[in-house]
Amino acid sequence: MHRAANSNILAFRHTPDSLALTSVCSSHRRPLPAMLKALLLVALSASCLVPVANGSLGPRAQLTVANKDIAPDGYKRSSVLVNGQLPAPLIRAEKGSRYLLNVVNNLTDDTMSRSTGVHWHGIFNKGTPYADGTPIITQCPITPEKSFLYDFTVLDEAGTFWYHSHFRTQYCDGLRGPLVIYDPNDPHKALYDVDDESTVMTLGDWYHKPSPAIVKNGHPESNSTLINGKGRYPGGPKVPLAVVNVQRYKRYRIRLVSISCDPNFEFEIDGHRLTIIEADGHSTHPYTVDSLTIFAAQRYSFILNADQPVGNYWIRAMPNHGASGLDKSFAGGINSAILRYKGAPQDDPTSSRKRGGEHLQEAKLRPMMDARAPGKPYPGGADVNLNLDVALRKKDDRFTVNGASFEDPDVPVLLQILSGARSAKELLPEGSVYPLPRNKVVEITFPITEDNIENPHPFHMHGHVFHVIKSAGNDSEHNYIDPPKRDTVSLGHAGSNVTIRFVSNNPGPWILHCHINWHLERGLAVVLADSIDDFTNKTKYSDTWKELCPTYNKLPSSMKHP
Ligand SMILES: *[C@@H]1O[C@H](CO)[C@@H](O)[C@H](O)[C@H]1NC(C)=O
Ligand SMILES: *[C@@H]1O[C@H](CO)[C@@H](O)[C@H](O)[C@H]1NC(C)=O
Ligand SMILES: *[C@@H]1O[C@H](CO)[C@@H](O)[C@H](O)[C@H]1NC(C)=O
Ligand SMILES: *[C@@H]1O[C@H](CO)[C@@H](O)[C@H](O)[C@H]1NC(C)=O
Ligand SMILES: *[C@@H]1O[C@H](CO)[C@@H](O)[C@H](O)[C@H]1NC(C)=O
Ligand SMILES: [Cu+2]
Image (cartoon, rainbow, N blue to C red; front, side):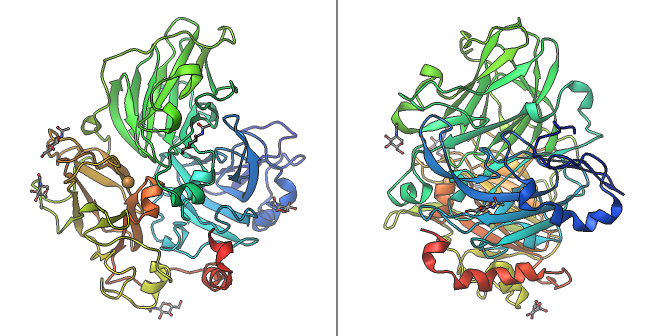
């Protein structure tokens, strides 16, 4: 990875035996001597870190979280950014890397959360549950002027991931960005020519008000759709849209990442088909579609073959709901970005939307590796079979799962377990923690019995991949042979009865929650306490991890969350 000499970008390449520093700050462009490795974190001092738009980071980096006034869609507001960027900088690493991500809390704006915690979405953190970044499950929040070093190693995973604040609704205010783990032995390598920073595409919703204000006063509707951090709102100014540049006859691996707080997007590119090869970090057999629906927090890699006449083409991402008619059209360039062939004029596309064609059906995603679902090939054929009944409680407009609405406990669940709590009765919040025995096949069914405007809920499980043995939709059949593997699944509408399976092989408390951040805030979560019986204290908890709670508990409540 090479950078301009004066770019203030940290980009480390990690190889099994050595850490080579290919570019850091302005003047040093030589390999890092072994002796200096220990000084790495010192090297990540503030002087290095003047933010640079669209810079990417290596797996060893400082993420400074600070407030900034920005206008990505032409409307200025305060936001919560990593290193001054929206979306947060791409973190890129090779398979097998160790990550040392130092999150520095420099937040000052009291209209939004001033504490934080950063979750690495889709990364299992096997053996390092304290690095999952989930207040108040695996840690206490990082308080203003403090930092926390996330130190974890990802051995087996590769593909497209992302990272975001997991504190309250903070990621809606901007703390969200892509994370890609490149696999030198990618089974699909022969299918594409280009796979770099330019082929990562983020889709997100954007709001004109700070999240704490809009979540308190009802049901937030997004003002604009941002593609790679750029977009327009209905009636707003014609600010520049994101442009994806391609060269005719080259094949691109586009890594589509939903960093959405709420809406799902119907995604398509005029004149081009999309050959899907990855879902949520799992390679799939190639599956060609014309359009797809991507739910909050999901990812797809698809091959884009630039085989059409040189020109400009609309990239379209229609949200399922939004403010002021955002969900109704593409007028004036809303919900859009531009695919531009080399040699095409710098004009807006005039292409039109194709209709019909093949729309992605989740059940048709067939994993390349370890495809068979664990357990026996019939409903309820797991060691542990759970039903999680999602409902909306009318009296206070909160969500419940099997009758319990999730509220943050006073003490992180991980700390409760370390202190010896083991049973559902002992573990808090009451009714929301499900202890699981070690190394068992677990089946979870989510019956959706009533349809309402807040469906469908995309559910995400931390710490595990799961097999979707029954996808959403009334006509979807059970599949035990080669069902989709992913980490975030839509529960669909009434009658769907989505069913997943996984193995409890990652000791720790893992949240399973709706990834519509507004719904999580209204209690739509449970915690799976994996391998609870033999949870041991073998793992080393750093002193900074242990300090998080005492420091957080001393904060005045206004500095915790508005
Ligand atoms: C944190 O904020 C202060 C001012 O609020 C600023 O001087 C300092 O440079 C910031 N630190 C970083 C690492 O950005
Ligand atoms: C932004 O969205 C809110 C609803 O969330 C709406 O009340 C407001 O009018 C929108 N602003 C614009 C400029 O459309
Ligand atoms: C949903 O799945 C569960 C478990 O497989 C089963 O017991 C139940 O009958 C199913 N419900 C419907 C409506 O299909
Ligand atoms: C685990 O370690 C903590 C101290 O870090 C201690 O308080 C606790 O009792 C230990 N728990 C068990 C089950 O050994
Ligand atoms: C699925 O079935 C339920 C009743 O079991 C019905 O209410 C719902 O409309 C059906 N959904 C679709 C998409 O057909
Ligand atoms: Cu939801």
